[in-house]
Length: 488
Image 1 (cartoon, rainbow, N blue to C red):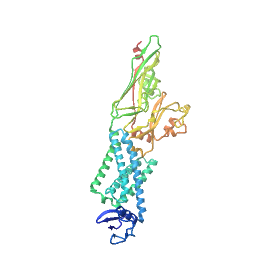
Image 2 (image 1 turned 60 degrees about the horizontal axis):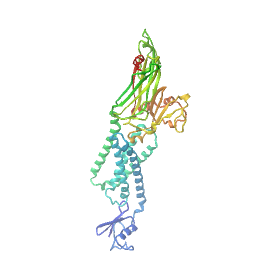
Image 3 (image 1 turned 135 degrees about the vertical axis):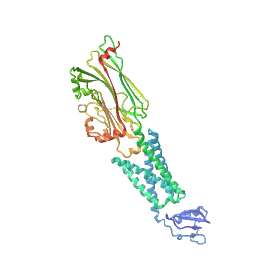
Image 4 (image 1 turned 60 degrees about the vertical axis):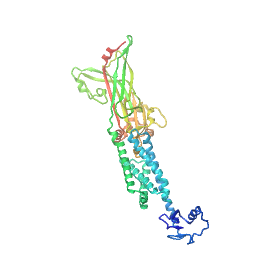
């Protein structure tokens, strides 16, 4: 029997008649190995006729540094477990809930990386143990390399915003750990146990490249090039009335269809029917009144004026919500609604103008939490939600909820973002995305004051980032024409 010299870990290999039968860290482990082979427990290990010692006799067991090896094992396991959890958190949401195939592929790749790191956990124990598996060092190297690539990418994404969040501290710790682990593996020269090390290196590089391409396509290319197209209609139908009735009933037909390739969320929607009265201006003074408050009330988007229309005044006759905040409009889906507008026959208005408008959020860029669908009343006190006295803030229906980027990798590097939408029949609807959380608002400030306190650059950046856009359509008819069409 031959006991070989201690290796770098202090482990001594045991061979009998040229065949390796085990290894030992100490004389106690040597006797345990021999006991399994049928040798007596009191065998004399110093008998040169039975045991030949190389590199030191039975008293040389340099495992007095074993605590260092155990510390390395513990640190490797802790780091790999943290990186494994990080990959699962990133990949699970995207793999099962992402909108596009590319985004789901990225999620699946992160889950695959987590699976590799799970396999690397027992490989750590084996590599710094008895090394019974030839590829244990390669598995550990692969797991550490994945941790380094992922944490580097996360830190790069964080540098774009530089917002302090607790997750960054964890990512930074894992990044520093991965540098230490990679240095340790390089000192151990783990590639010596890898068959075809060049092919292994190429495989790792190709995997990293495919992940980067998939991630870039998912984050940048598809959300930018995918177009948005909608068909909107707001039309007045044939009025109905009775011979003795002082009223006429005017049908209002509202219609929306998503004809583009991207499904969207309805953040806030509104239909409003305006009644406009004006005085005849024979001299054409109406053109000079285009910038008056009353004249410009006709449209939120476009100013207009007519030469022979003067002192235009508008009033809201009817207003309401269309499909409802938090609802969705899938690609190819349509939604229609018909309302009845009641008007007196002796109505004073010259024209009626129906406006249908809503704010949309692209689903390929963001995902709204379900809580956004539930409306909140700004004038009612309730624990954990926004409140403002109606005397100072008016009465608004409010929708508020978290919006998450469709690639979970980005969500981990930024502060939470929230969508806030407001509707009232008396004011224009509004919606914006920011880091402001209305649940934490304790000052009872009005929406206008809160809006003024927000950073305009942030509002614009988040609007573009998540694809928050307004679309609208309007239809104008003559009141006299409606009265002539009225059917009994």
